[in-house]
Amino acid sequence: MEHVTERERREPAADEPSVRPGFAAEARQLQSVRVEPAEREAVFSLRDLAVLYSGSKAVEGVEFDLYRNEITAFIGPSGCGKSTILRCLNRMNDLIRGAEVRGEVRYHDENLYHPKIDPVQVRKRIGMVFQKPNPFPKSIYDNIAFGPRVLGMKGQMDEIVASALRRAALWDDVKDRLKQNAFGMSGGQQQRLCIARALAVEPDVILMDEPCSALDPISTGRIEELMLELKEHLSIVVVTHNMQQAARVSDRTAFFTVDLRANETQRIGKLVEYAPTDKIFTTPDDERTEQYVTGKFG
Ligand code: ADP
Image (tube, rainbow, N blue to C red; front, side):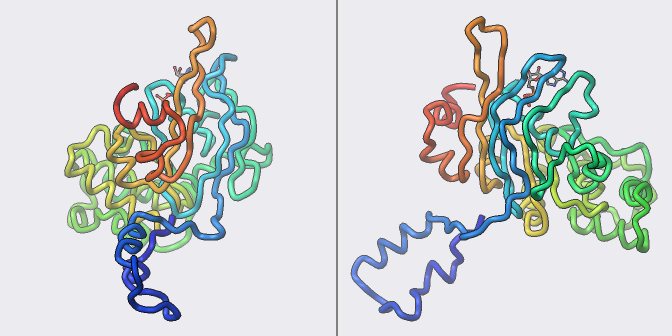
């Protein structure tokens, strides 16, 4: 999402008088208005998405578009299907026995689930970072080089590794100990290493499943800064339980909840509301969203 630039906020257009009645009040109001670009490119389009585990529905009826160069946050109570939907975006559910995806997931307007699509290539384009940092028991260098080697990426490996570490804001921390085991790093550094590992294969999207929930506030702040830098070049979808995090970093937020069916045993996750993050946190349309973001439920 594009924000009104500082210049646009402060300077009237050339054909406007520089001062007119009410301008100051209007200008103050403008500071909280975000400008929607006329055309926005959808990276993912989900239509009537449902996911079943062993024949039992976990989520249904999910429809939205996720946009390029944006951070989209998924929020909602535990079990409402946030991770399940996230995993649909890079076919990670293929790896879960008994999982079945119904409906449509389009990625840059191609059917992500078409039989001709190679899930390995999908996961190269659409990387994933998990809740707990999960470096390989290898050196820092080999963690980053692993993906590019497997994929036979061309180029000088030292440069690929250095570039990924720089983009993950980790280079200065580790440039003198690239051959050391990744397990010697702090938790926050390990998570940035996992982000660097995802970046090394030049992804178009990074999916993050509660990437900061195992980190302290300082490491969390660094990951959030990194996310804001990275979205200039790619798109990010993040599942988070941390409302402040969703409000701080995301452009749009999707709020999900669990629908209890008549017998109260079948819990099905549903998308309640999807909108610019400001709106979700200040003037949501649905009462359930308001209750959740104000901490009254969930
Ligand atoms: P959230 O991320 O919002 O906490 P999940 O996507 O993890 O929700 O879970 C949604 C529902 O799907 C839950 O009822 C959960 O028990 C079920 N579920 C998630 N993963 C699996 C799995 N691997 N096998 C069976 N059921 C699962």
